[in-house]
Image (cartoon, rainbow, N blue to C red; front, side, top):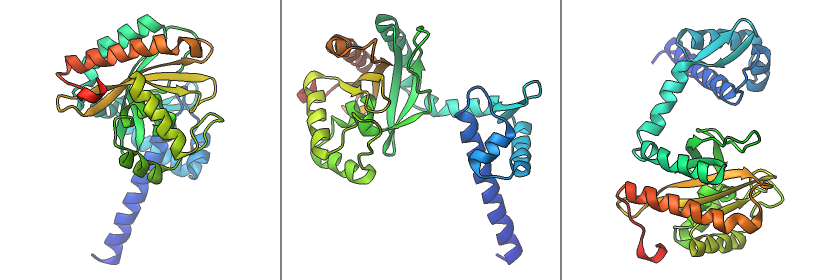
Length: 266
């Protein structure tokens, strides 16, 4: 490949990378962003950011509101992102269980998976409360600061858990985040014993999450269900009652999927 062609290829890759950075910035701003703010956040010149956003708009991946001068995620981005959930055959069947769990607890119900070494929320039914806890679908969290993440990895062997700790570390996101491998292992042992995991303000101060694992037909931990809400509405003395509701929902979804849990964790 000659030097001109190589330069063009590198320039094309750089443009794609910059456009994706802009899309991620837009995804974090539900109310929209000004081009100057997007440029600052992504480290781009305003003219470059505007050119890339205009290109994205022509393809439907970004949308500009001339009345507010704000940029938003476009409909095509939603359509493409939605395929991530559709290709996982447990997302649609989970919705009735998420809705029932939301109605029973009045809190936001979530469905999550492990993607790489992070927990990803793939589906959600929002609480009807004015003040509610929401990590939107597509949002990620460190495994050991996430109720759903802990529910899934609590099914792993100790060697696998220690290997994951070695890869991702134990970031101290809040004062309650688990800080040592021994604390993680003890917490996961408690998860296995009671059948549900708890994020006790370990990811966001003031928010709690209660989660339980869902099993596939191959007796593998395929995903997790959780409810998340303000700690004031999820007091510690009520967590076991809530945990049993979440555990039941996860068990019912497991059955709906034709799944089964290993006998040791039933």
